[in-house]
Amino acid sequence: MIAATILAPLLALQATGEVPVAIKNDNPETWTVEYPRLIQPYVVEYRRCLTVANRRISGTADLEAQHAADLTRCAPVRAKSIAQSNADLAGAKTTMSPEQVDTLFDNIGKIHVARGRDLDQQFTSRMTGAETASNAYEAERPKGLVIELRDASVVKARTDATAAAAEKDKDSQ
Image 1 (tube, rainbow, N blue to C red):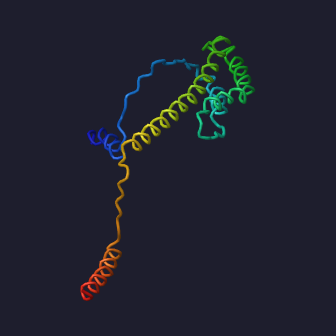
Image 2: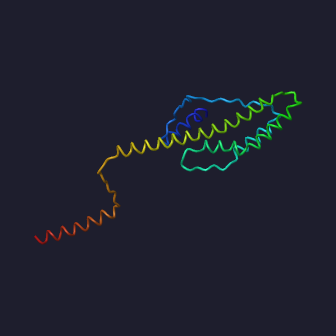
Image 3: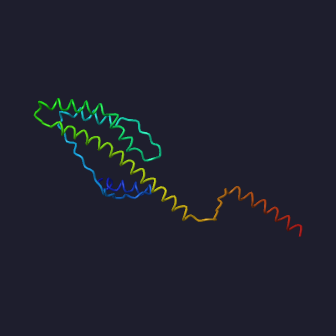
């Protein structure tokens, strides 16, 4: 059962003609989003505001810009969430300074924009790969060779027609 679980993705990739590729991130970005459970509703509300948006796929790599625009659109929700978080944490056992709360919400916004950037990079990579494959096909495909595949009835009709003409030529000689 375990072997089937491990082999299934590889077989699926092989069937689609894709090969798994390990990609090393040369410039990793890391943000910490640790927070007390007490302010979880405010974090969830802000994240929901960022993610619930209509995305326009226009054939260009512009999802990072769309994700960045979400920060401006959700600025009122962010301000309200920070204020409510600081108010709830004021008398709580779990302490988090107002600067830490502000950094937390900044990091959530940075992660959101980084997701858009990652989608743009994936899109650009796929488009470049498709263009390279198309160029390679055009460069390597045979030129001037045309093979016609005909239905058997067409071949038989042509054979019958040429046979009749050949018989007439024979008889006339």
